[in-house]
Amino acid sequence: MHKRTWSKLIPTKISAFGWQVMQNRIPTKLNLYQRGIVHDNNLMCGLCGDDIEDKNHLFIHCRVAHSVRSKCAKWWRFLTAHPKTCQEDFEQHRLPIKDSSVQAGWDVVWFSTLWSLWLARNRKIFKNQVCEEERIFELVQLRAFSWIKSRTTGYSFNFYEWMLEPLLSLKAKRSLQ
Ligand SMILES: [Zn+2]
Image 1 (cartoon, rainbow, N blue to C red):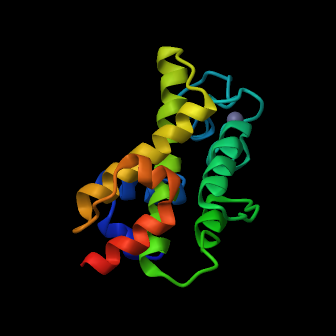
Image 2: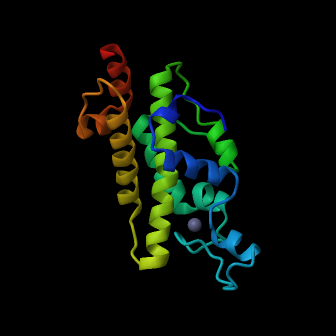
């Protein structure tokens, strides 16, 4: 997992979570079962219930994850690849433009997506509260915005502007520095 400029823009807890996802160290149902921590044989995905919950399902192939990721791609107006694994996904998460501020922002969205899917999954499993795909997507936007805003000098855009023109806001903030 390459350290790119994103590392300065997200809380340590979130980069640690991303790293744990890569290392397959998060407590997905399959992981807990394989390690003998739970004996419950309900291994179906906490978000969609359609397939066995491992990290690649939860963050890539799950229909809820797929929907949220498509919304992100649409928001940034980019076509995304179809990765098979979380590692592949992170490696392929490159924009077709060479701009490190914009790329860092797009990477932050990647972490925010993972984190928001994970929290939605936990809420569904532990509190039986369903978080709609559109709401998860809004939380991806909101979390990414609050991390970038609080860690970037001269980022003067508001949430509404970030939602409308994420690239423009990231390009423009650089000229203020
Ligand atoms: Zn699923």
